[in-house]
Image (cartoon, rainbow, N blue to C red; front, side):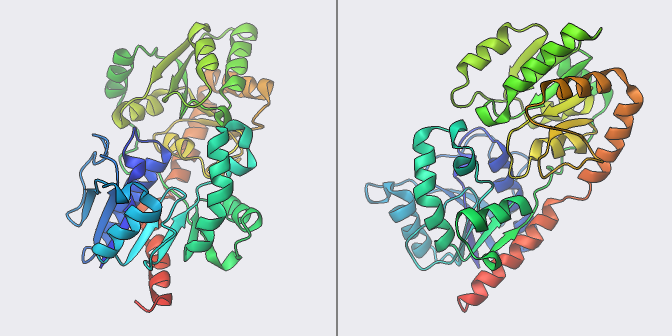
Length: 370
């Protein structure tokens, strides 16, 4: 049996959705060696798409579009699925083909485009308002990363609850604490000091870096501490002004996009990982940080709990500053949170995510009589 998955998230620098797509596909292929899995895209894949290798029954398929197939979701992909006798298609990033008879499953990671529309480009918001309800109706099942988003999908997209299933994500299997020597080499190469606070993620409005900047300035102004704030991630929409402020601010280091190996090193050696996002469907970076032993400060995102992280209000500048001061200055507090985070992260695995996802595939196929 051939299963297709949306490969478009792997045609650019990998972010959270790209991680979800490739790690889920790897785990699915490992659990069902008798089946064939394809990551299908109308655009060439990024060089790092197959980092760490792929199982023999998982392939990257670049389906170069012709004039007919340039309308990928409405014409090109349905044609490809029909020609290749694909049994089921999984849209891992909010989209599935609206035509054709191939059953589909869609993952809706969050409803940020609808619930926090001011943090996105207007055309993306308009597209989501038009297409998301149609996609949810077309798919046999809707997957979400958390119960929070499951409830939001049912309410805001008017989807019956039995059709929406929450399946949590997981840290990449390679994300684990690294040795001090490895961490030191990566820091030296990136220009990162020994004592630093870390943020990792796309620099975009809903990630709330303006609050982090104000909190960090508060730390430098009111406490006898001089940590470095290290910001990892690519620049997103409407953030040039913020990036300019960050570049000019005292004790802040922008390192841009880094490899998974360097990110592991930074997670493993930071005084604290900070993630004050306004809204998340899951919040993969805090869980990745925990898997590497980092003490975490985060807003109330589904991947963290009060016992595994310092949970703050997203816009509480002074509360965030106090938490940074506490963890930078108190080794025992860091050790306690690090141990709690490691235990919490160990509860999640891509094998479990794939197992639950395969059960949804099977139900979708059964309903189609396949």
